[in-house]
Image 1 (cartoon, rainbow, N blue to C red):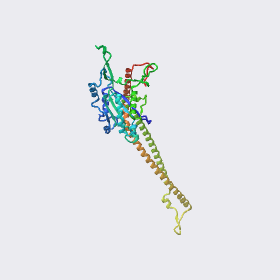
Image 2 (cartoon, rainbow, N blue to C red):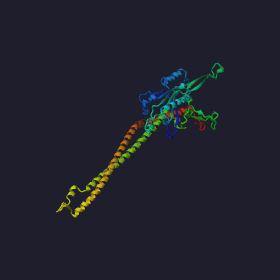
Image 3 (tube, one colour):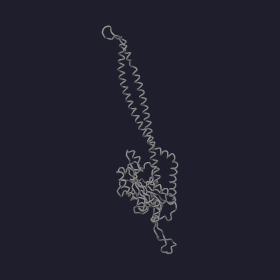
Image 4 (cartoon, rainbow, N blue to C red):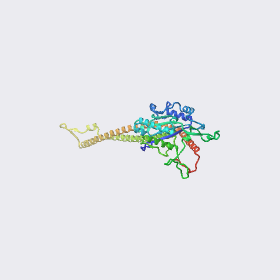
Length: 429
């Protein structure tokens, strides 16, 4: 998961596929067998760009059954509810591929990552499908950069196996064979495949704690190490290992996607809230400018009423007895002068007010455009967020219950595989 700190981190996640229904869902997603998807970031027009490094020859369950029939794998001694399938997801943040040219670089990177997967799984024959998805849009980066950016990642569905030695029993008639290796089988075993490994010193010997117990290292931490070290060894020296102790090493793919969608929802809600604040600011500014405009209109109207009417001026003065001159009384002369001065002032004021009025109208128009743009963006973001909000409101309890059940089941499995130890007996790194 990207941390926006400029560091490109390799991430390897493992998910147990516990039931046939889980296997079917993963197959539908990985092989793009559905006509439509709830994930709005999947772009069907780009599905042809997805790359299979190993294409399935049948559905996953039938492939498993055929491998069992051919003796490639063995389920001898497995419980009916044992986990028989696993999925690895290899990933680096989208910006890494974007900065290296995108699709072609991603194809080469994951072609090399597939080689790492073969080593981690124990052989290509145990891989049912390996496909790089190139049709999932990175919405956040696309919106930020104003162009389409895609999130490239690799899905590898495999069968977890270990080599198991079958010994001759004590009831064997040939005493010389008793306790010796009868045969070695490739046993399906999730628990043994991913059991914690001892930490080794510089000489390759297991390290011990103060009580003389082996110091253990989580198998998922080993998975992160193996993927990172392999990619570094084949030339990708500009990536760093996923952070130690982060939840990325322990989340299932489903949990990881739930968490990612929750973070995306929070981001969209934040954008909606920001748009709402911008909308309120635009409304307030528009209302303020409207009030200014109304005040200017009143002031202009009042200024116009100050000036004399044409009729008042025309009635002033009397024609002289001789010549064409007009005579005014001293009062009329003073009045005319006063109104002439006021007329000049009024003209100046009217010009000033008209300029202010035009400026105010222009400002109102600008704010109206901003309001409409913000409102349009707000409605768009709200529409995008609504399905998430509805789903969160309807299914929040179910999601929490699902995640809690996954965590509880994981804890019970761990306790079953690793009986409780006294505090300080050993530790995991």
